[in-house]
Length: 171
Image 1 (cartoon, rainbow, N blue to C red):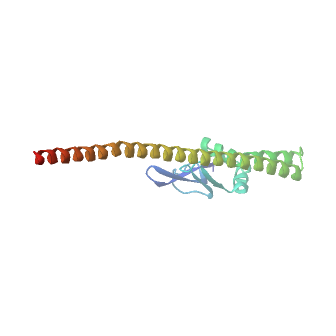
Image 2: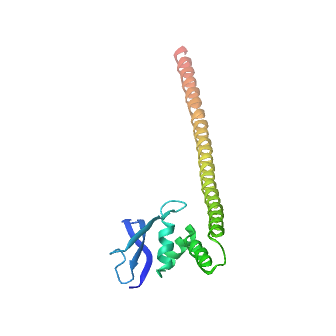
Image 3: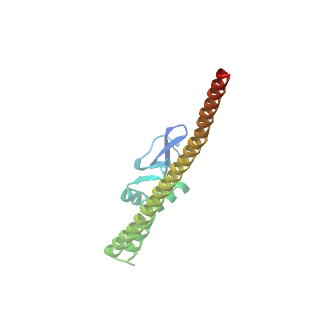
């Protein structure tokens, strides 16, 4: 039975949410699966990925073939690297401790990159909000400035009208 690690679509129209599953390659896209390995939400920025790395590595070692998208997700979360390091341990190229140290160092570096992206996005969002507030203040000030002379002109016209009526009454 050929097993694939693939995405199973959930969520409503226009708001996809995926489960990462190990399934028989002959089953339907959203059909029966052998094991749920995680979830993927592309609606957030950066995308939210929850993955059981050890379960995914176990399936990869047993011969499961990931689809292209699933392979990208597994690589992003480090499952492919962990599988590669486990192969090196089996061959005797490295020890279990060395492989674990390399994997942990990679995880820390990856977490730093993700945090930097999130910080950059929040900073850009804050800057955009600040620019929008400044633009709104400028528009409001312009509107107030445009409205103020109109009131003064009306007052001046009223005064001029009163003066002319007073002069007419005197005559």
